[in-house]
Structure formats: structure tokens, C-alpha cells
Image (cartoon, rainbow, N blue to C red; front, top):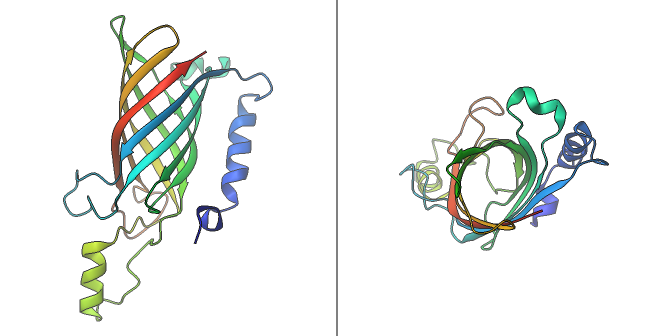
Amino acid sequence: MGFTRKLPFGILGCLVCFLSAFNVAEAQISEIRLGVFDHNVNIHAKNGGKEKGPDVQAQVVFESPKWLEWAYSPRPLIVGSLNTHGETSFLGAGMEWSIPLGEQFELLPFFGIVYHNGDFLDNPYAPADISRHTWFNEEKLALGSRDLFWLGLDLERKLSDEWAIAFHYEHLSHGQILGEGKNQGLDNFGLRIGRKF
């Protein structure tokens, strides 16, 4: 089943509300990014490596609106990530902060909410069906909730006034807040390049 069939219609409403919150008519695009990430990396031994293939991710980052100055001026962003092997992909929105590290480097922590199209939210086999239940737990990633928190950190290096490259780490999880039960999480890591405006 394709990504759009599994994606809740709520994501469209969420993105519209998110953008309208800082007056999209006046919003200025700050940066456009493209990255390639290793999918489901083995940070948590029980979860890592269950899904394969690189992810291709795009982000649109906006200038921080004045009303967010109280929160240290995070920049709103929209993210879309496509797994090239047909595994878990996602769409969502979030905020990103900037911590300068000298003239060439920045730390960019981010936080948001995404909706994913992963096949399983929990183990479909009853514990009594021991062989299939065990197989599922060993081979399949169960994320527990269709909506997940999206958080992580970029270490960005400035290449010029217009271009930057970054090491990117992201973690997706419902944190027992957005969902219940299984919460195996998903970790991705890789490189992205950004064009600043």
C-alpha cells in the first residue's frame, strides 16, 4: 500500500494550522535542504537494522517569526522523508534552534511531530502463537502509534554564505505520550546539504 493511502488526512490539517500560526503569507523561506540518511541504524540493538535502505529527506526551513522570540527564536520547518526500499516514510513539521560554535559551525537541535506509513504499529500475532509472535518481534519494527515525536541534532558546517553541510541524527518515537504499547522507535543518521536564502 502506498504512502499516501496510509497517511492520515489529519497531517494536511496539521500542516495548514502549523503554517498559519506564523502567518504563511508573510513567512520567508530561510533554507531548503536535501539529505541522504542511513535508515533504522543500530543504536538500540533490539530495534536497529530491522528496516533497510537509505532515506531521502527534504526540509523547508522558514525564518523565525517575531512571536517566537520568547522561545529563543526557533525556525519553523516542514519535513518529508522517503525510504527508498518501501519501508517507513514520514511527513511532518517542527522547530529548530541554532547554537553557534565559532564562525564555521552550528549545533541545530530540532523537535516536531510527524506521521508515518510504517506497516505495523504492534505485533499482530497473539503471544500464544509463539513462533510467529517471536518472529515478528525479531524481524519487524513496531512503532506503536501513527503519529510520532521527531527530534534530533544537526552539526552544520558553513561552506559559503549560501551553502552548508551537516551531519544529521534523528529519532522518532511516541514516548508513551502519543501512543501506548510498543515504542521501539526509529533512528536515522546521515548527511544533508542546505541552500540558504
